[in-house]
Length: 505
Image 1 (cartoon, rainbow, N blue to C red):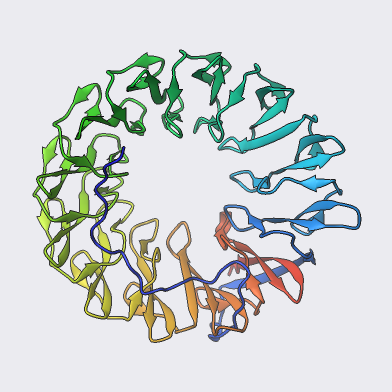
Image 2 (cartoon, rainbow, N blue to C red):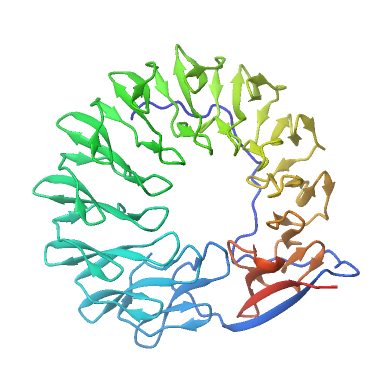
């Protein structure tokens, strides 16, 4: 779609930044007199020279990079270096979602192949687009032989086609199904679990998707100059253009945006809504419980939120991607602008106006509490359930959040050239930079800290700190079962696995 209504309010943070994966810092803060954790460190090995930026697992507990050896190139994974090959395909290193598996593409003599968990797969003229299933147990990739392309799923070759659409290969969220877009004889079609769908003139790039339960498949189709949405093989009505379909969490509902001329409408559950001048980009989504559908629309120069077909008050601007639903779907909020004033509309009620709303709106997991950050002049502060907190020079982007049990709230604030964690309204020590996260039970707080720009870094859990390190790896730390905190660190050229283990009384 060509016309979009974007966010008119600035979600700025004053240039705050968290420590990067390989940055350096210095430790500060004294440990608690009786630390509740003991720090266990294991030296994994020496870090190599990296031929490209490293790749990290989602939990920050595994790292991989390409290194150059005496006669070829190797992949380094958690201090273990694999065999040398003629080449390693750029950007081919992939960790499974749980971080336990690693795959990458290599050049071996005149063939290309994927190495999975250290074992070589079959060689082809070319391989690419490797994907793991969500549970990490399955894998798939595209291979080429001659002028034919095919998908390899769990080691088994599929049918051959003229081409497989780049980045179209995907598993369903339940990891049981696999789908991709193929082309043959000038026609495009979707292949689901090895079965070809209807042939079309084209399919919308990136439109292919499964429902969260994996039972339904939807994508955009094109025939001549018309576009339509295909759900489970059934075509919907044709329009000049359609937007990528959105499937509800339970898979029972579907919605998308359609365009005719210069007008836009939402099609939800086969029912067309009113025509508007525009529908907000990325604003169409279901509530987490799947019972409600919301989006932002525009008409006559004004913007408004539509929830379950009911149009809200009109404003000069609405936040991009809004509205925001609570997890139980019972509450809804969004940022709006009128003139130079910005405010949050919560459950249909307009909140106080500020110079700017400078963070995402965050609901507690149970939906009872809501928080966001605002700006008045040069002062930034967090509002929790309508109550303003202390004023700071800035609030770090993405730092505002509730604990999983919804009883605590934290964020990182800027005070001068220092950052500090604020938990339940109480300030922690000030450092050059801070990153803070709750444990799954909400009872503990872990902070990654660097005291000054060119020094050491350390991790503190409830005030009990680790030894200083040259760097803490990206995406970490992560809480494990039993309250153990785990992450990777580097120190004096070595890679370390660090665990903060609770001390049992």
